Image (cartoon, rainbow, N blue to C red; front, side):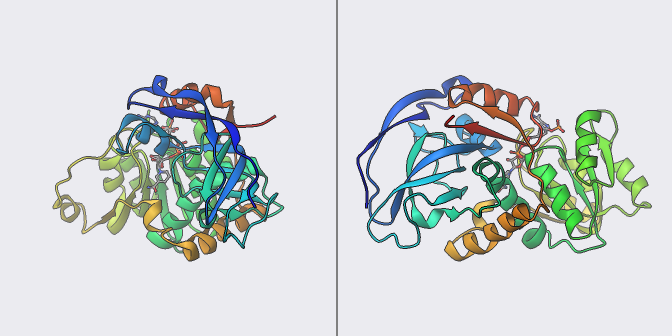
Length: 332
Ligand code: NDP
């Protein structure tokens, strides 16, 4: 059962704005209610969606905590929680918001137990991005062996996981990145060809690489700046999965553009419509954790921050400085 209340450190913000709105504060975390656990978090994940919450692109009630993803140890369990015990290691990425914190309460059915082969920091680095990769490749794009796929921002957190998952199932992968150094990382992760999109136009190069046909599927988390190039890279009846806004939202689109560019399909999917209940969380997150534990997915953590550095972490992510995943280390 629950033990005493806990002092915790957490990042909160009172108004939308730049990274400077993020404040480190003391909070008190109560005992878990029915169906809840109290988690001593060891690591929290940094994700682009956190910046959308901070800027108001994805509106939410304020003041608020921030962060969707974390990992740590169960410290107390509330009434009716049978599946978890004190000292179990767990992770999550399906909200509710409030992961940038040393301790928190969360519903027991929103977390998954971590296998021995997956450390806390890897879990906090891979759950949200890995589950995004899982739904994009397997259930949204339904990519098959032998297909050719374009991954925009292939050296980013989601990008490197997409490259590895697609290669694992036998697809051919063309990636984009803003520098030769980032392109080299995506190549090392398995990309068959890379385009440095700060230098070379993407669609003409994709046509060259595909004998003029274009790719079967594009995964595009960059948004505004890559949208047209993504459509122009598709083969007839190809699919664009536009899943993010790193350069800004795509905005209003002339529907007929899909006809003009070859009877294309386009979707704007989110993780939360593919992980809607306990069964989906267990089944599909289990698949991600299994691929990590078996070494099929190599999770790069290139940026580690203290909680007090949350504003700097957001600046680095928004400046496109990061590669792979970024995490907040919450205890020594
Ligand atoms: P990344 O690590 O991929 O960082 C974003 C990358 O986008 C940058 O590193 C940069 O790579 C590229 N980029 C291109 N233009 C810009 C720009 N103007 N400003 C900043 N970056 C730019 O982030 P994540 O892995 O956390 O997320 C990737 C995308 O996936 C995001 O758009 C995010 O919102 C989306 N996402 C969507 C989900 C969903 O459910 N729909 C769930 C999870 C993530 P480069 O330097 O190579 O250009």
